[in-house]
Image (cartoon, rainbow, N blue to C red; front, side, top):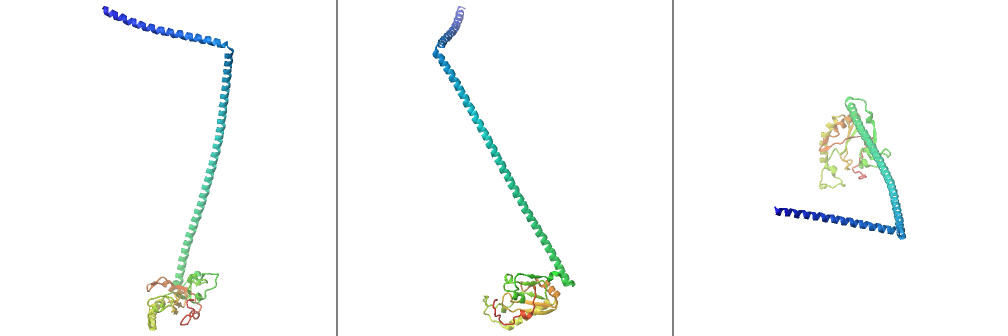
Length: 326
């Protein structure tokens, strides 16, 4: 019991000492603060009585005001510059937007113009294609009508169609080719510098290169390994008789033949040409219709009408052409 009371009293005394120390430190701080404040008031009172201090305060006050005014001026200037830059930036942005708008408008106008030109071209192309298609259809119809009229002319004996009376000139502004006019053939063909006048209907039919034989191939202007082979005229005559017996009955099946001429000239444009003259144009048209495009001796026949004025002028009558290839 005595020991416990002593321990409790010791603990209370220690606690009291701590509280006392804390209170003492607080009093010291208060006293120090009061002394510092009193000292400052004394110093301030002394300084307020000093002219230099008052002058220094006024100077500090003036400097503070000047500094504040300067800072305000700098702030206003910076704000003014910022506003000017902002206005300038807005103007530049506006100008840029206007330029973009103009460029966009120009681009749209160009695109519209290109689109319009493209549509115009496409329209012109479609129109041209439509006209070409219509022209082809009309040409096909015209040909079909012409073929029908020709068939009716040949088979049913109707009046000669006007289309068959047409004359076609290869070069209307040039003079007539005398050789083509006489024989219906020219060594220059379509590239001849003179006019080749063709008819759509005649009594005379020309079948170019219809007859072929080795004797016709004997031409000094052509190279042939067998050119030196000899042959007799009787062989050529016999071969032509066989050709005649084979061809003439077929030609007579189309109509009455008035004249049949075979060209033995060795020139390429005349070699083996066969001329058949019928009594009427209708018979000649029937023969051309049946012969054109047919095959004979492995070759397709290409027949055409020729307007020969005279057999006398067409046939040279000389054993060898003095003009050679001309």
